[in-house]
Length: 214
Length: 230
Image 1: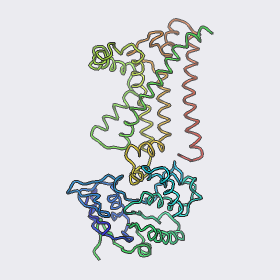
Image 2: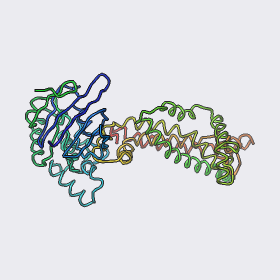
Image 3: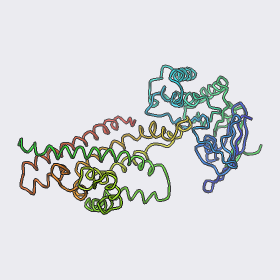
């Protein structure tokens, strides 16, 4: 399996106890809000500490609490597309996409940035700031930015929720084709069953902090 | 009038140097503290917050007195300074910088902390998932997004530093040509009945601090008015 996740933690009265494995395809975590889907993504990305668990992505151990392994977020090589995209408002589209390529040589960074901008069709918006482009374009920038440093897995938190309904369907298809072109395994969080069915290869139903057995 | 300008030159120049140096120290030490208070929960956090803010409300003479107890010739730190540098720090321009810095730094910390708190942590999280270290996140995300709070704090800190009187008097004294800053010189001029000197110094002080505050409202206000917060 490409990604193996097992995380346990108590947040107040909420108990998170997620365990799942997924392959090269797109896995959807489907469930109502408050089920612990976003929390699971944050745990995989290393943005939240959990009491127990083990996370392996492409044979790299990101977390193994028992073995005292807990890579910081910056070393996990996990791409993350946030629900509101979290594009850095003080940087241009191009600077946002290049932001994760800090250690790269200038020429390679520029080439990779161009490649990513072309992948999502935003070359002509490269010098704009995030707030002056549309929601759909912002989402594409967030995708390009997350994919640029060649992550081992891409996490998407409600990637279409902030968009209008017509746009949602089109960008859902784009997401699917982006997955096929980039070959990067994706874990997608959504509360929309249709969306999960359309985009994902495997759908896991999450309820009250757990994957429901089906 | 010319004579008064000549007499005002040293105190005003000293005030500018002391206030600038104190503001720079306050930024270097105060920004990390402001960040800690805005972003981290740790034991003693409330105590640190109170300690940082106390100089804002304490009488400046009390601040100066505490500093005297610490870095004065009889103070623990003062003895170390004297044995290292061969001379006491009290009644030197460095003492003026120290006293001014302590009295003015809370303004910087307060405003910068507010600025940091207004930065959504989601941006910092995004930067972390993109491979950036905590230091890099701070300088490329947190500071640029909190710049207005930091600028407001720096300006207020500088303005307060230009007007510092009590703590400086206690720790650095009022030595003309050595530690007599503009605000102290105004006091001396009035005491000595030199009304023109007092007026010239006061107008200069008002001009410099007023210009600093004008800069603050111009830069801060222009960006706010069009709703573009970055």
